[in-house]
Length: 615
Image (cartoon, rainbow, N blue to C red):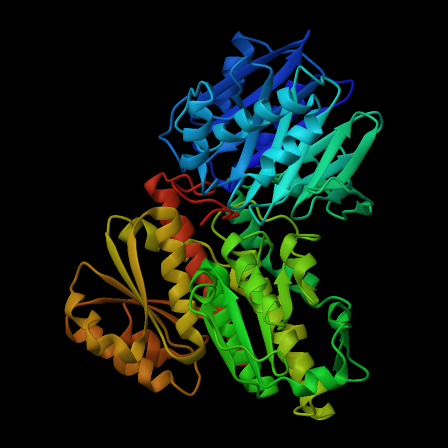
């Protein structure tokens, strides 16, 4: 959730750190701060609210130096206040720390440190870390040793960066568990630290990743890596292919709208180079670790994810069961990790879906499965993320940075990737013959152009937003493969407009939700031409009979649906397995235009974060 940026080199640290924090605003935060080493002193600048408040403070009280760290905070322990904003200092102001994650045993540690005479100035759990480092530094006289010993005292997942006047030519970074990433970036006579790629892509694309229970000692000339035991480690340097220009809005009012409009391209990027049309086959090089025998031995897939990715996991169940005939169980990551799931290491596979690859509950679900010998496949967007590194096989979305907190292009890319996975498993297991594969691949190839047709219409959404933006409740209905789309449509409206919305399987409408229907509650019905269309038509008639408002998503040319609805949004006809990619886009645009009409902060909705790295 929170953002971390660090710099050491020959340029003004504050400007680089501040700009890096701006590039991490999409992660969600409620306060921001930085610390710069200037003439042997640590200067702290912290403010509540948006980063612009911090920028204004720096304009009044400059902090000039060549080493600095910065942080955007999302409150967990302690309220939203300047005192609780990172960075936090030790008793003498010689050491500062920023942290992502939660210190689960902070109360116990705080009591011990208070008893030893340490002075606390905040309500945060983070502050115990800097006092532990202070304690161990004065015992051992070495900052890396102090950080290493402090981290060993912590329970829970944390990503930590420390800076000190005691060793002014070093930055220290540590990672414990899965509290979010730590990326070390390599420049010319300068080095960078970030919790996510966009913060440093303007300066470098050469990076190393800090893993669980590892520490980095960083100078302007490079970095040395150690395990928590103190053993030196060798790290590869990766070149990240993202272009920093892609992070910019490119003239769009919001990142979310830009990312909605990018979906024809992002879906193309998912399938690019993965189809062998001549042979009628799918190539997924990221799954090379699975032998043909292992793929044949799969008897069950456990799909786990959170939020929007969980809706993609629900859809993956329909896709994989249809294309590969393998049963798929779907869990919220947070539920899976605590229910002691029955796993068979010889026959089961865990499928994790995550945009960031850093979601703490999803990573914990992977650890649960790996601990029982179960192999993992990850569908992720962020190259080199923790989920990608933990997995036995990876399908990268290749969607590029998604800045808007409410996921759009990553979601449809997940659906395309799940379709590819279903095809791949189907072909490897002999379920799909060459003729079937050719038809299924052709359907996929046509999808980006169909997405483009859906995106070509905008006026209808502005009209609907103008008419219904004052409504406080919406109901979304779908059947079969479109039930997860109903859930996703409701989630999008909730996330960015703060309007209460529920998604339901349409067959359940009469079992409770029908009591809510009146002339003030719009009902969005996904009623495309498929095998349950007539059932959806019946649902729509039941809503209209009670004075309800129906907004239908229908297949082009379906006048019967149009006659039964108050408003109709048409999508092109497509393969039933891929139609959900088309039907979700109108729901994204409807939510977007309603939120804009309400004046909401579309890209950074309140209380939400892009990468959820705490429980």
